[in-house]
Figure 1: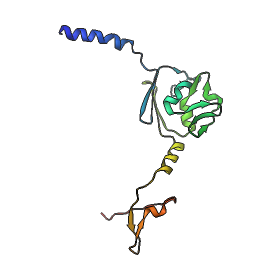
Figure 2: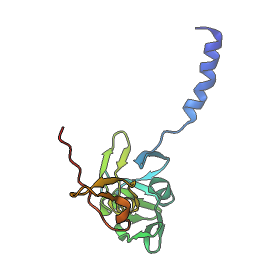
Figure 3: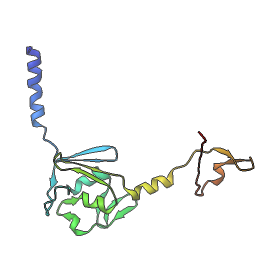
Figure 4: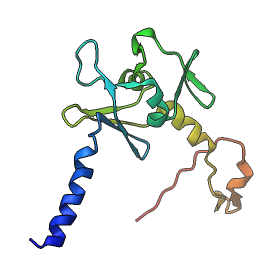
Amino acid sequence: MERRDFLRMMSAAPLVATTPPAAATVLYNDRAVALAKVGTDPRGSREALWIRNADLPRVNDFELKPQGACRADICVPIPKDMMRGHYFNVTAFARKVGQSIVADADARVWSLGEMPMLRGGFLESRVAPDFTVPDRAGRPVHLSRFRGKKVLVITWASW
C-alpha cells in the first residue's frame, strides 16, 4: 500500500467511526428518514415503531396537536395508547389511517405505504387533458365539454 493511500484511509477512519448508526429508518413517500432515537414498545413487539413526537413531521408531514395528528386540513384523533411521554407509535397510526406497513425489525427499517385518505384528494384534483373522440353518430365530442362533472372514459382497441 502506498503511503498516500494509507494516510487517506487513516484520515477517513475517524469520520466513519464517529457517525452513529440510525436507530431506525422510515421509508415513506420517496424519502428515507433516519431516526437517531426511537422508543421501545411496552408490549415487547419488535414490529411496533415508537418515534419521538418531534420526528413525526419529518416522517409523514403530520404534527401532533391537541385535536390529534394533523396535516393540512386533516386531523386524525389519537387514542392515548398511541402516545407515551415524548414518543408516538407511528406503526399504530399507520394502521389507523389504512397505510400498509412492511417492517424489517432486524435491519431497523420500516416502510409505510400511501395513505388512502390523502390519495383521494390527489385523484380528485387531477385534470385530464382535453381530447376529442367521435360519438356514435360521428360528431366530435370534446372532454372539456364535461368539465366539472365526473366522467368515465372507456377505451378499446381491436389489436
